Length: 157
Image 1: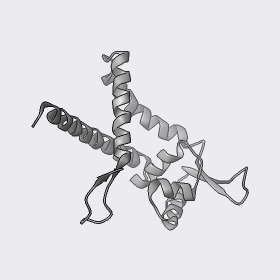
Image 2: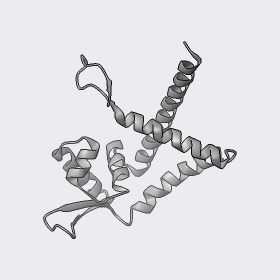
Image 3: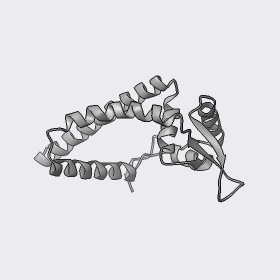
Image 4: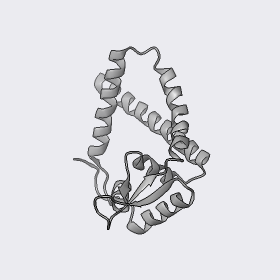
């Protein structure tokens, strides 16, 4: 195994550790809010919304029925509201309520504070490099295509 292979393997291990840490954070935040993990994922998407249920379904890979059930749950819990689109009255948008956004943001801010504390000793150039590496990693993950069937081989985009 070459030094480069070892370094890439070490990087991939670090990426799995990040995923496990983020997974734990998401589980804890969902539990603190009293919602399902998929509901939290929807709220994370809606942070940049509002969106139609069709768009939510596309981003989450869910059927229209599943999205309707998810949005209904979040609406009953007071996290989201449906509103008519101002540009197309036939369209309904789903957005995070003004009341729930600060509650959600406060939980993520707790995590952000811990992360910022770990990066106190990293200089600006190191932070820029880390951000670029993470964006490259995210793009690589987005390019990967996992097979639909176990018999197919994974492939890159």
